[in-house]
Amino acid sequence: QVQLVESGGGSAQAGGSLRLSCAASTSGHGSICMAWFRQAPGKEREGVARIWTGSGATTYADSVKGRFTISQDNAKNTVSLQMDSLKPEDTAKYYCAARPWCNTWTPTLFNYWGQGTQVTVSS
Image (cartoon, rainbow, N blue to C red; front, side, top):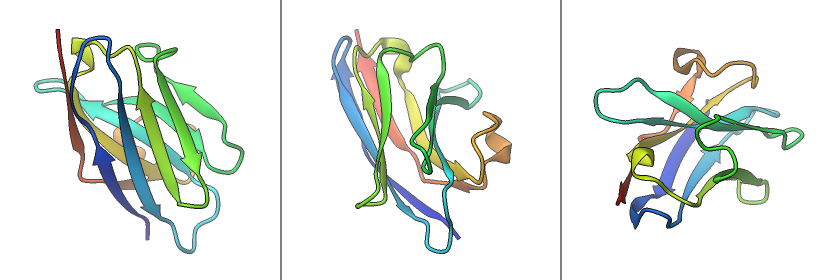
């Protein structure tokens, strides 16, 4: 069983920064894929960044590439999402998710989810 608890988020001005963290309880699991998704009102949930905890390899959605950075702190079992150069279109509820392999962005194929944290960016 994997339990995920997000923290961080909040409000920022366009061009500003926010940092999200996901505390992962992965007892009994080896390397896994940790990802951040977001969902804006009326829109589908979309993946924005993912990391393979074994090697630290990362992948980003084109919409956030160069602005968002996903990282892991193995000592704290935490995955973070540093969001810089924020845009109003980044406004959404952000979710941490996990699955065995980093070979898909399909939300329904992610086995574990956090409760989500709101990010609001004003212009």
